[in-house]
Image 1 (cartoon, each protein chain N blue to C red):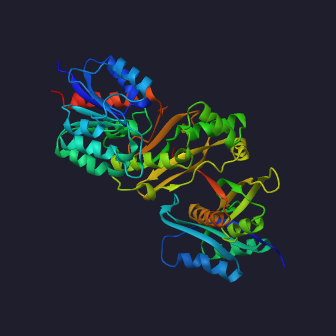
Image 2 (tube, rainbow over the protein chains, first blue to last red; image 1 turned 90 degrees about the vertical axis):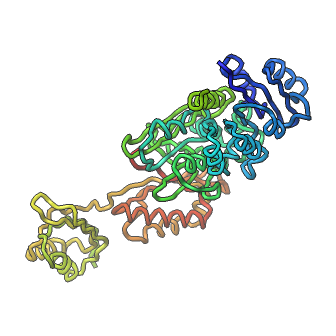
Image 3 (cartoon, helix red, strand yellow; image 1 turned 30 degrees about the horizontal axis):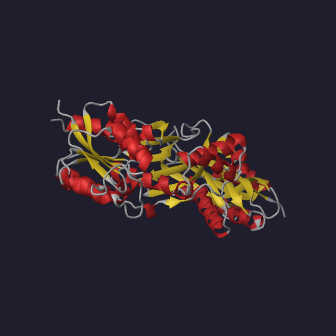
Length: 328
Length: 171
């Protein structure tokens, strides 16, 4: 069996998680890797342990002469994995990296929400023209196979509506406010301490992150054509403990819900009241998505929406899908 | 003057021309105020009659007179009820609820005449801090509820209140 040659762009926590996971998979071999400043290329396979050790001690992984852009356009890889941080305004530099690879008829797998939310239609069109895969399961709800679940598992079903808890940080904060009567500020501080919230959690708590995922679902799974600005957004920073207690006293919970209804053309992210026994009322950092379908009724997916190994799981599934569909 | 009460009536009409008028005419003559009429041509009773649900407001003492008048016109009154607000939704509001004129907030929803705020619970932690309220709205039907929600959202925007509404449906 000839292994698939991988170029790994991005060595943050997700990139490192993938490197770890692929180390034990003989089907795939990483022949190039890059971080934001440098890169390394070795056609017979990169020593992952040494790469990660170097990254850890020096802060960069290789030679500045091999930046991501050069790897994408010059190296002879089969699949490019793009896992750099999300830029939701321009999608760059990931957008150019992905486009370069697709135009060279290389498969692309990414967990980067920026390029997918901004340019999925164009990127999927190029992939189809070049007869290569462009897969991004990890962009929505991490390890939860929601995209493949809708596209293949629920194939043929019209989707009437979709509701989702798509941001683990917000869900953690709401869970702690509800269960421990922490104030919003206390719960956010705790989320930061535990690494669930970033130093600047603005895009999580104002609903932007969930809205970006909703745009990806709408455009790639429901045939809509929408932008981030089309999503009405209300975050969770205004919530009070009293609100959660009042909801509780009435058998309800409050969750930040991303919802879309293709028939009414509505997209919204806002705190909503739900019956406590609704499957969307998940605890901690979990994600959950309920899809209301034409024939199958309501189906709910629940699982871990973030984390390095969890996202690596989605990427691995995408890689295996490519190996299966485009197998040589 | 005697106080008006709201009453819901379910009427059965024969499926032939002029029957809706036969139902409306006595209501008008007695001076009852029609709040809402729902007339679904595709739902029929077991004996093939058309069903009309109507909510009116009139002095309670005049109700028997109205029922008689309807029967004289061959309109069957199959149900008389006083629970006419059948659609219920709960909301949570957060903000300076009291200091942005709570009476006005409630009145603007009530003014629609087919929807009412039936319950309000308010928690105020400290002066100048934002308060939290649970609000229950009842309405005569889905359309009226949807109007009430539109008004509530308008008021909330105007008064900078955060509104949390309920997900309902077949989830």
